[in-house]
Length: 330
Ligand code: 5AD
Ligand code: SF4
Ligand code: FES
Image 1 (spheres, rainbow, N blue to C red):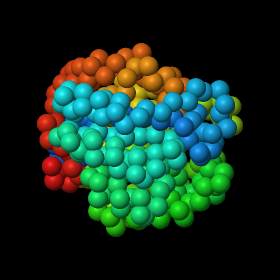
Image 2: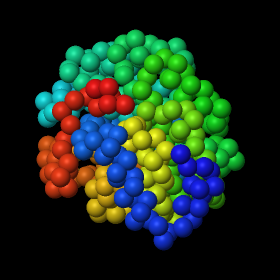
Image 3: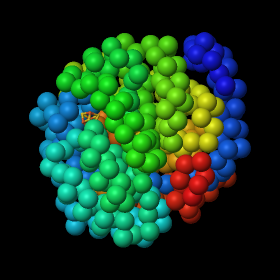
């Protein structure tokens, strides 16, 4: 395994990038194979109580039109995704208190009627909520640490508490969820050293899934003048994560494709083994504007499903037909 100094050296040195990406691709192939797991992403509410400096959904952004999708429509979207062959549904939203524990439990139970694994990505909740969601049938939970640099975390997340984020990750682990986390690459004032610490953190908490994406500047946020993150650096953090955690699930993130038209395929060839296509109806897509120029805004679920299969097959890989639990349990 690589030491902190070695990770820092690799991140600082761009002369060995080809070696790094080739190695990460080999480690991916040997440990999780050529299957690519598709996770159908439902962005069911863009309402958020948080005020993360980088995110277009932050509550201080008054310029976006907000929406909530209710249980019946969520269920319909999930059913359709399951018919399209998705074996995992991801329910994602801002931190929207409207979806009380009881409301979430109903939604979870509806979706679990279909033959799918269910991932939640709805932010910080109490232990009791997480337990109730698990009991209702949720299998996995995504909550990125965003950065392990406590100072930077504070700058980026007014009114949030790094320790509570850690508490969430610990609770989810304790409850037996498969836990996904991850970080942003290219935040203002983020150091290479802290990115190395992020990778070591993923290892330390034994994450089942790690999503890494470049920061993309959003015009209606306080970071409107900050430069975008660097695609290659984000890819390097991802490749190093694969080398350090050989058998986890790593998505080729949408943010990577936003900065590079072939970003997801490049990521799949540099350590990633998961893609999370959007299965939300087209009418909502433009409103879930975490960052600008998101891909697939004018596309519908069928189009994305066909598009991504074709891309995966074009590089000699195949779409998995199992649930894609971590460590190849599924
Ligand atoms: N650029 C890139 N990624 C972002 N996220 C939020 N805002 C941005 C942005 N401006 C990411 C965060 C969050 C995930 C859902 O989206 O990492 O966890
Ligand atoms: Fe809300 Fe998540 Fe955006 Fe933060 S990153 S403002 S928690 S949607
Ligand atoms: Fe949406 Fe390609 S994945 S059009």
